[in-house]
Length: 516
Image 1 (cartoon, helix red, strand yellow):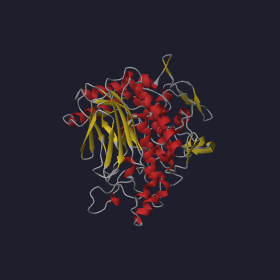
Image 2 (tube, one colour; image 1 turned 90 degrees about the vertical axis):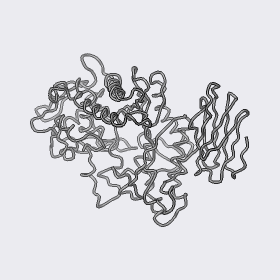
Image 3 (cartoon, rainbow, N blue to C red; image 1 turned 180 degrees about the vertical axis):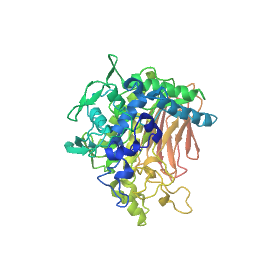
Image 4 (cartoon, rainbow, N blue to C red; image 1 turned 180 degrees about the horizontal axis):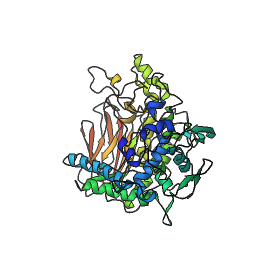
């Protein structure tokens, strides 16, 4: 309803907003109004992955602000006598607790994510501060609130890779998104007003930056209490559950970290994508130009190195969480319909050569190489059982097409069929270590995998390495450092070492030529 996958309609109504007017006012870019399915393909009226830009538009900006900091910035807005922030969070956490109670007996549940890709809203922003969240109109809090109250505005037009290029008019029909009889609570609180000539004016330019004379910090003042409330909600069911914590993805990419005092057993679950290939649906190992910074990355190694730099920023958030916590990249992946869906066209024409997925495989390979270099765990987004090789359908939402599997690639009689660019993500890796992993790396072209583990003498369980048949269809050779013994069990390799350092090298070879 506000251009993403988010809040149900009644939450907007509780806040005083009429979500049926978001499109007419340009308060949100909503697919069902801006995209003509009869035309298909990519359309200028609905840019690919445009939901990210909705973080800056007023429907989202207002709601994120109310959800995390409504008690401070909209103190008069109450629902049944309860402040809007408490009302929204209580219901969110209540639903989380209900789900937790339903699945508390399942030992395969590790814990709960706090909230998917939370936004900052206007918290910590000056009234005239541009909110760069993607392509399109460049909003500020003041302009967003003005549009929400029915003013027509001409905003700078931000073009990825170019910067500001001209202006664009928003809310040309002067539509207010506030329900009849409801007013903007921030305007009521004295943050801004409308002049006699109909222009928005900031009465308190730093309204969203300070409360009671103190500069606010979004992570410390609002995310930290929320994280602790999530922990309390789920751990009232099971105390051993982990808290997979997420900050605003735009902020964590710029180096924002988690505040002090996080719940114990918290995990840094930040998300990461190659924003260029995600938004443009294009990828090439020859050259990639970053859509936000304009940085030119020439060659596969330069692209991989850039991934490592970006991911290092996210990893540092985990390193500083409670003095050092694990990082799980909670989402990663690629658009499989990249480069004008040429792979789909080749498949439809009967081509079953894995080479049709060369671009997708290379993109995945470089991504996982970067993860290996930083020893980061990750979960790939996603597996969609209804996905098909049709850019109009994809994952069934927002023209995204990130599923590693497609029904159109099912081959009768082959139960493992349906996968896309499997060579890119089915890779050997250390699943469990008899100590501490020092390094691991995989060369997809040669098939060589190497790992170094500092062995803990107090651990008797063996190191476990996943060795996928997909990469080693004819078997593999194992080379070990002195004092180590290996045992194969299907696609798992178990290695026990009596030495303090374990070095492992796996190579493609015919079955029966293994040595230690």
